[in-house]
Amino acid sequence: MLEFFYRNPGFAYFLMIAAVIFSYAMQALVNSTFKKYSKVNSKSGVPANVIARQILDSYGLYGVTVVHINGMLSDHYDPRKNVVALSDSTFFSSSVAAVGVAAHEVGHAVQHNTGYIPIKIRSLFVPVAQFGSKSWILFFFIGMFFGMPFLLEIGVILFALVVLFQLLTLPVEFNASRRALNVIDSQFLLERDEMEGARKTLSAAAMTYIAGLMVAVTQLLRLLIIANGRRRD
Ligand SMILES: [Zn+2]
Image (cartoon, rainbow, N blue to C red):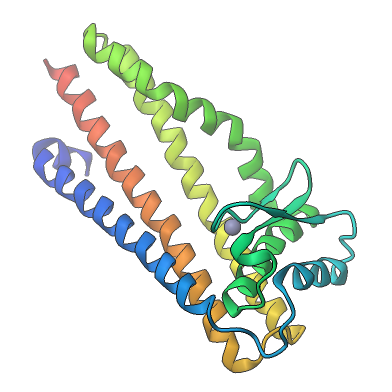
C-alpha cells in the first residue's frame, strides 16, 4: 500500500489538501451548528452549569467542580484538577447546544472517575504525544538538511506517535457524547424535540476530530514519502 503512494506521491499530496479542506469545512460546520442551537433555549430554562452539577451529583461525583472559563467553545474537562470548565457561551446558557456541550464535558469526568479504560490509556499517552508534536520537526529537518536518514526516520516515528494519540482520542470523544445524550434523555434534561439540537451539536464536534485525524494521517504519509525518497537517494 505504501509502495503505491511512493510511486504516486502526487496522489498523497492531493489527499492531504482534500483533508485540510475537509477539516476547514468541519470547523465551519461546528461553528454554524453551535451558533444555530445556542439560540434555541430549552423549555426548562436551566443553565448548563446547573445541569452539569446535577449530572455529576447523580453519579455521586461531588468532588468534581464546575467552573467558568473565558473564551468561546473552550469547554473542557481537566483530569488533573478534576474540573469541568465551561466557557461563556455554555456556562450561563440554557440553550440546547450548551446543555449538550456541558453534558459531554461531564461525560469525560464520568469516564475519568469510573475507570473507563480508553481515557486512562489516552492520559498515559499525553506526555509522549506532547514530546512528539514538539520534537518531530526538529529531527525531521536536521535529518533532511544534513542527509541523515536515521534522524529523518526518528522524526517520522515521533509524528506517528502524535497521529496515534489522535486516534486514541476518537473513541474517548464518541463515548463522551454518547454518555451525554443518554444522560440528557434518561434524566429528562431536555425534551424529546430539543434533543435533536444537542445531538447535532455534538455530532458536528465529533466530525472535527475525525477531520483532524485525516489531516494528520495524510501528513504522515507525506513525511513517509519524503523519508523514502531520501533513503533511495
Ligand atoms: Zn470531549
